[in-house]
Amino acid sequence: MFSTVLYRCRPFVLALGLTMAGAAFAQSPVQPPAVTAPAQPSAPSATSAPVVVPSPAATSVGTPVIASAALPHDLSPWGMFLNADIVVKVVMVGLVFASLVTWTVWLAKNLELWKAIRQGRGALTVLNEARSLSEANAQLGTSDESVARLLRTAVHEVQISPHPDHEALKERIAWLLGRVEASASRRIGRGMGLLATIGATAPFVGLFGTVWGIMNSFIGISNAHTTNLAVVAPGIAEALLATALGLVAAIPAVVIYNMFSRQIGGYRALLADGSALVMRLLSRDCERVSSGMSPTHMTRAAE
Image (tube, rainbow, N blue to C red; front, side):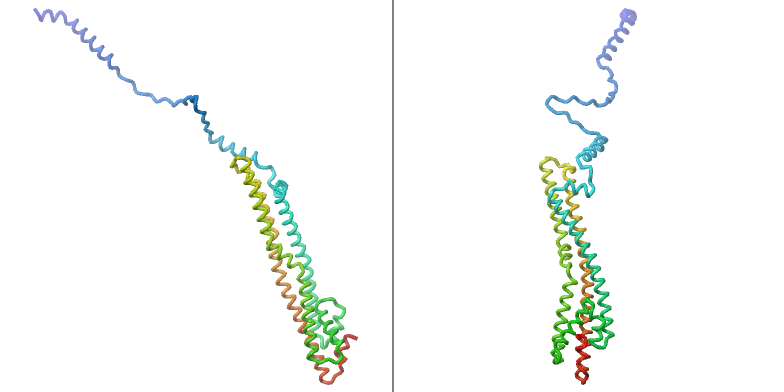
């Protein structure tokens, strides 16, 4: 009887089981896989300021624009000179003037040395070929060249000493020739001290302009309260221009001074050769007098 009742209630039991299974499934549902969404920028809070991150394009384009706007438009040497401080301008003008003086001395001294050496070599040729003071003076007596002055000095001393002691005469003439050589050396060396001064001081004058310009640049940074390179770049450029001008003035001055020193040394050697030839002619005339010849050989040139 129980089995008959259970058989008859089978549909009801099946429906009850399905209902209980559905309720259990509803209590623990299966979660779907999480989908990653792009992060949204959070809204700035009321207490914090918004942070702006510039893009690479904006950084690469904006900085040159700001720098080019802050820099002066004319960065040529003339433009930097016009925009320089008054002290730097004075330094630049002084260095340019020193450079002009250097090249003026080079031109004048080059012509002077060329003329003096050419005439001196011609006078040495005459002295070397002459046989007496009178013969040499006949050819060089009207010349204003230094070697010719050496000869005239010796002839004049012979003239005012009609019956001299030969050794004393030679000593006096040697001393006078030394004075003439010194005078000619001083005359040919005019302008060399100026070249030496410019070559020694021009770099330091340019350095003074550089220090002054850089000092003004740092003062400009302090007043502008910024470390932007555009603030300090013009002043540094002007300062370096002063240094460049100092080198432009100093380097040629040193080179020209050394070149002229060698040429003047050669000219002094030429004067020494002229003195030696004059003393040789004087010695010949003294020997003629000692051998009994007429002393007019020594004084004829002065008549």
